[in-house]
Image (tube, rainbow, N blue to C red; front, side, top):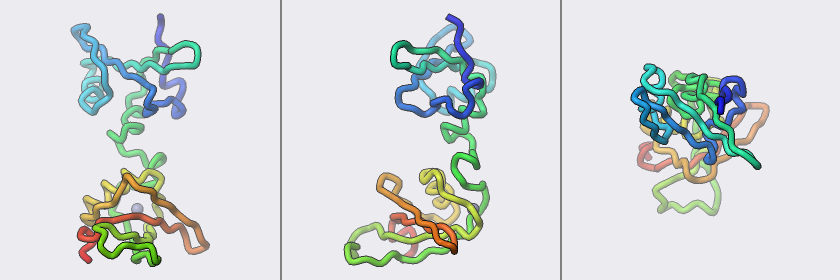
Length: 168
Ligand SMILES: [Zn+2]
């Protein structure tokens, strides 16, 4: 069976879907599974080739991962401004503690409203969380709900942040 081209599918290829299964064929013919950073690096270095099985409703298709750049962006190995809405720079942020009667003062996390005055948008919370951890030391909760609301003044985000990491 001749594998199809993932590059031809473009950005719609389900790189990070849970049902997409990756196969790595090494130089020596060994076949392993997985999609970690090491596999990407071997593929870029030409030491292996990556394939993906994309299960369809009636049959599965084998794809060759021939756009490693797109693969890396989808997996967060390479920064993707389009997907994340975030530039790779030091963000300008303004934040205030959210108010509300349901807030537990003893919780290690507080809710904040955040504005990105640098013009970025948060489309991918885990990317923003790791950037802001590096830049400001904040520990943003990424496993809980977050939200955004737009007004003429811009978009503000409701996030949960570990109180201590904000220095309050
Ligand atoms: Zn920014």
